[in-house]
Length: 277
Image (cartoon, rainbow, N blue to C red; front, side):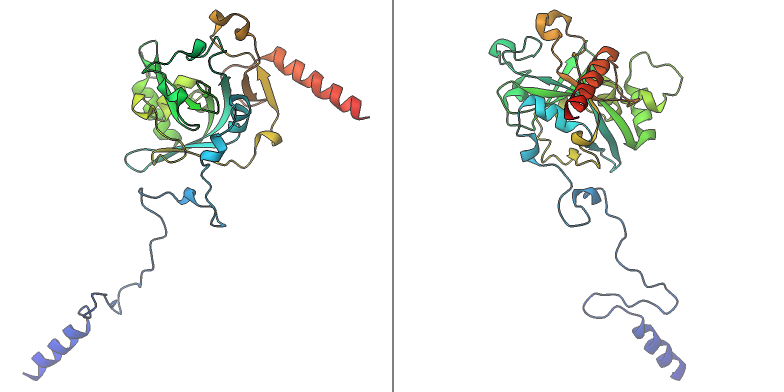
């Protein structure tokens, strides 16, 4: 009986106390709180100083041209259903100015079910289908029917997941593995790499839990930005020549490099420097 009482006494010492907390056994390591956050909350929503790193509605609330420039250097984040986060730095955009812009889907003030996102509050996604198989992602800006097309990203995180998505979604996919430079160097490619489809149309980039924009380490003022003609809008007359595409000069992830525009930019910069002296 003495041995039985001793065993019962020891068992009680290792039982959970009445408040439900568990006392660690002397042989068990004492674990602290989890060091990582689960998929339901990203560590990137808050900076080290406690301020949100995510760019809110005020960032998007500006006209299309300055917004297209402001996007450069910022980081687009896509969280997949399994919690995987894909990241890419924006290196190329195009501005579409609304009803006056002959290349815009809202030209002439036309409003349809397809382009409704262009007329919604700044920061609203406008995702549309081209050639019946590919998606492009735009973000509305100030001004009815005005928006910014995201053309290219520099992949930063989740590259293998991007590669798998591109291989799965691209039409006529060959067995060749895609190079890093091929993952997001085009508007449809970046949508494939981030699994962006029509279901993202009319979502709010400032509040959505599956896709958002974070402030990058370098802003447009710290980057060499080229203003060039937009791509694939030859039908738009004089609007096809307006320098409404913006990209980071020297970035290998840009979809189309315009050498003439780069030479003009360098000449203007040199002229400005000469004037200073």
